Amino acid sequence: MGCTDASVVSVYVPFKYDLGGNIPDTDRLRATLHRLHGEPQVDAAVLRSWNLSYLAGHAPVLWCRLSEGTARLAGAEWSYSRRIRVFPWLGVASVDYTFTTTAATATSEAALDLTAFYDDLVAWKNADYIPYLDDCGALTSDLQLRLPRTSPTSARSDLHGTLIRDLRQAVSGLVEQRPFNYAFHDFRLCFIGPPDVILADRIWSLLWLTPSGTRASDEEIEYHRFADLDIASSGWSTVIVCDADSSQDQVDLILTLVNLIHAQWYICQLWINAHNLRGGTNSSEWQLADAHVLSANQLALAQDLSEIENLNVMLKDPGLLRVANFLEARMEVGKHRATAMSRLRVLENHSRQLADYKSEVELRRFQALFAISAAAGVASLVPALAQVGFSYIHTVTTVIPLFGLWGLFAIDFAVVKRWWKARRPSVEELESVTVNAGAPVEIPGEQGG
Image (tube, rainbow, N blue to C red; front, side):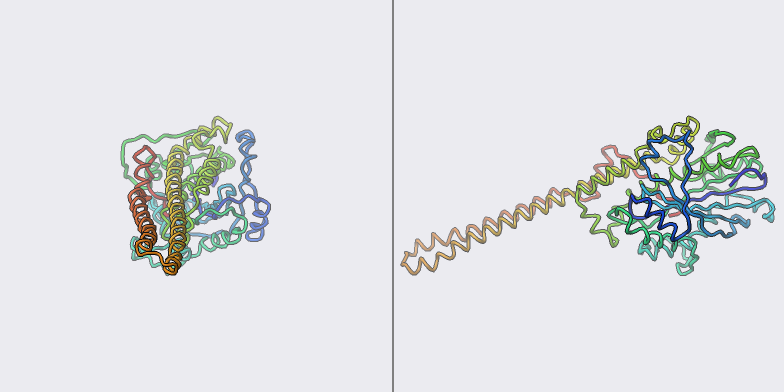
C-alpha cells in the first residue's frame, strides 16, 4: 500500500456488509472479535485532525487481521492482505483487501493495464458472493435470470462469505436489531501507485472503470493535493498517485477516510433498499412496523450520519477536511442520505395508515358487538311478548328495530370499506408523491452488488 518502491502498485478494495443493527456494547464486541479472529485493534485517530466531540459520540472502529492469499487479476499475479473492520454505531462490517503487485510479476506491457482489474475482480469475488447470497436467501429468481449462464452458482470460492455469516451470527445477541437484514454488499476501488505505473493518460479509465484508451467526455480530471499525494475520484473508484517521499501514514489516513465515507454511503443504501425486500422472510415485520419505530429509525439515521453535508462536525484539519468534502461529494453521500430519509418517511406514512385502518376496523367490531348485543336483547323480548298476549302489531313493531340494527350495521361497514379502498394509496404511489415533491431520486445501485 505504500509508495516507497517505484515498481509497486496497490489496489485497496473494501467490501461492506450489514451486521443487522447498532452495536452499543464495545467491550462485548471486542471479546467476540478476539474469539473469532484474535486481538482486535482500534483505528487510530489523528487528534490534530478529528474533533474530540465526534470521537466521544462514536464507538471506536475495531479491526482484526485475516489470512492472506494470492489472485491472478489483470494479467498479473497479485498478493493480498485482509482486515475485518467493524463500525459499531452503524452496524456495518468491512472486509478490506489490499492487492499488491510489481512490474516484475507481469509478463508483458498489456499485463500492467490496470483497467482490466475491475472486471477480473468482479468475476473473482462473485464466485464467493453469489453462493453467499444463495445461503442468505437473497438469490431471487429475478436475480438468477440476470446472472451470466457461464458463471454457475454451484462453483464456490469461499473468500469471506462464511466469515461474514459467522460474524453476523456471533454478534446477533449484541445488536439493536433493525426490522430487516440487508444481505447485499457494496465495494469500492482505490488504486495506489507512483506516476510511472499509474500513467496519467490512463487515470480517466481507472476512475470510470472503462477499457484502456476510452474516454467518455472531455471533462478534466480534478485532483486534490494532500501532503505528497495527488487524489482523484469518481466516487466508485479513487486514484492516489504518490512518490517515494510519500509516507505510509499519509496513504493510510486517506484510506481510512475513504472507508468511513463508504460506510456512510452503505448505511444509506441499506435503508433505501429496505422496503424493496418485502418479499423476503422479514417482510411482514418490516412492512407492518409501527410508525413510532420508523420515526425512531429516522432519528437514528440522522444522528449516525450527522456529519454528512457538514464534515466540520467530524474533522478540524483544513487539508483533510477538503479531501473529505471532495470524497463525500464524489460518492454523493448527502443525496443518498436524503433519499434514505424520504423512503423512511414514505414507509412511516404507509405504516400510519395501516394503523389507522386497524383502529377503524376495531372500532367497527366494537360497534358490531354492541349492535349484536342490542339485537339479542330485543330478540329476547319476543317470546315474553307472545306469552303475555301482546297484539300482532306490537310484536311486529318490536321485531322491526331488531332488523333495523342489523341493516344499519351492514350499511355502515360497507361504507367504511369503500372509504378505505378509495383513500389508501399504495407504497409506490406514496413514493411517487414524495419524489414529485422534490425528494432526491435514487442513484444507480451498488457497485458489484
